Image (cartoon, rainbow, N blue to C red; front, side, top):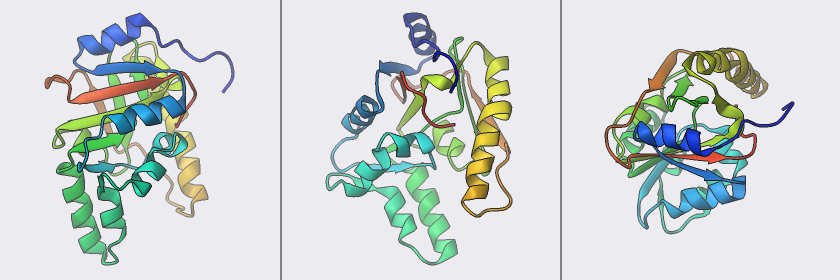
Length: 201
């Protein structure tokens, strides 16, 4: 990434908290990983959507190796039957105690924007799990909602499309589900950990 990263400052944290998001700031991906793991109660069913950010900071590996948590993704990935796998994935996402992921843009106005091709992440973000934890690098911070939409289409989509095609899926990616998180009405439900490093798309 060229140039300095956007600042994670008090005004941004205040704007996010003013909209009901439990916003926190950390300096590194390692600190973000530790902060995420500290939010997961013993025995909790923890699931997540596909996330380059979570993989980059080591959360996915930590969940796979954990003996104190029930890792929901491992359960559906272990199922060979396609229909059964989808049902387990749905159940373990909606009924997760904690659902983890990232978003595509964080506006200084306090609004957050997420998008998906299939919607598998936005569903649990919107409703279901009692706790949602997002991790986002400072590269995803933008001025306002208009800039957030531009980032989705001009930055996040091309990078994700290239990643999907490189993985062997010629259909690539697309923005089929686009959600603006204006505010969270349930205090403490959504925690957003902002990291002073470039992470994800």
